[in-house]
Amino acid sequence: MVAPTKSMTRGLRTTKPQQTRRNYKNGRVRAQALPASPEPLNGATGGNAGLSFSSNLDGRSTRATETAIGQRIPVVGQNGKPLMPCKASKARRLLGGGKAVGVWDKLGVYYLRLTFDPKSEPNKGQKVALGLDPGSKFDGYAVTTKVVNLTAMAELPDGIAKKLEVRREMRRARRFRNCRRRPMRFDNRERGGFLAPSQKSKVEFRLRIAKELCKLYPVTDIAVEDVAFNHYRKRWGKQFSTVEIGKQMLYSELRDMANLQTFKGVQTKERRELLGLKKAGSKNARKPESHATDAIALASLAVPVCNAQISEFYVWTRYQNRRRQLHKLEAAPGGIRKREGGSVSIPPFKKNDVALWKGRLARVGGYMHGRMSLHEYTIDNKRFTQNAKPEDCKRLFNQRIMSERQFIPPLKSVGFLGAGW
Image 1 (tube, rainbow, N blue to C red):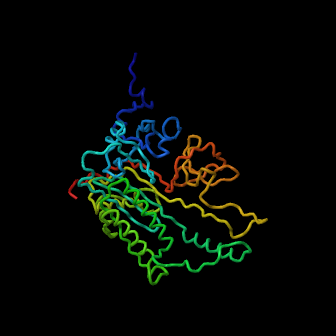
Image 2 (cartoon, rainbow, N blue to C red):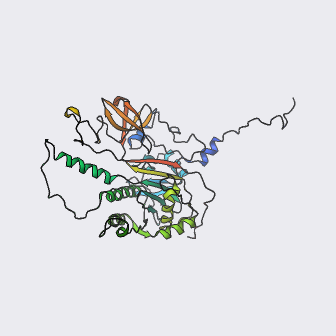
Image 3 (cartoon, rainbow, N blue to C red):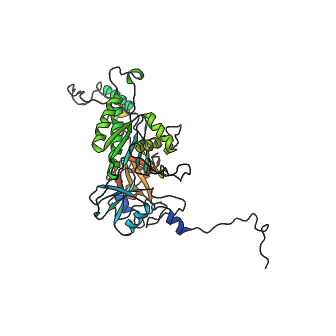
């Protein structure tokens, strides 16, 4: 038999055998919660739940090129106290030995909850920094130790002023109708500690994210970019600044969580360039270069980092449901007013509930004629059906913050910086 020559094999497609064991050894465990987790969704993932995750029931990723759990996995003690994050290899040993269970938090972050009390003193001499880059429409977040543990971008609530304007117009229209209404009240207009609703929604959303991150990581320092906004020159307010009032309210709450440090934008830019991190020109792009890299630079100013490599990136946004409207601007023919707004769906479901429908994760929306509308389990929250039967859906939990996770491939340009910082 004649051996094939190089010209004979030219054009043939050759494939290398898949190195499953090596890929699994180098990769990280898929962020798949175990059935022992207290979260309702985690309990539904066991058995034949039919979820379309790219992993088996043991949590091993079935995609060789996909990085599953991030560079560091958050760890919480048996008493709920946050501990120092661990590597993926140690997380596998804790999960395999039954010493920890996997849980998802309200931000969609996967973490471990220990089933025993550690003997050594936890978090001794360790520092964890939370970087916050506030903006008018988008925020950047980063949690760092010597490495980058988590990066995220938050899309702030929008359209608050427009909603208040519509509500004011509807109330004025009701006063001239021949219908029952509440009596007039003029003694409920206290302005003490007043904060504009548009700023209040942003501050409360920032605080909610910061509190959830402090439950996962033992944050010791919080670094915030101090935004200076000249309200006198650029806006109508001549005597006060709603941005400054909201900023001071945010700072007072953050000081109760950890040691607060503020930095200027020039310092953030210098440290970002020193770390070799890029900055995107588009602020609404859902990628780390938009705002998360600035948050990493801020966190490194408080606690020096040795490696600025980004492994995981989250996008968070808040649900903005339509408000309940008993009386619209214009009545329907016959005096029958259609149902609109509210947070109730067909019992026992509520809006924003995460449900399992035909093996698919979905969010519950409104209802009509005994059928529910379901939305995609993504941050865009697009509706894909309006004819879902309640008996075909299994309620898992209620989620107030929409989250989306991205895995970032390794970058050769960002390397090890050393411990001399």
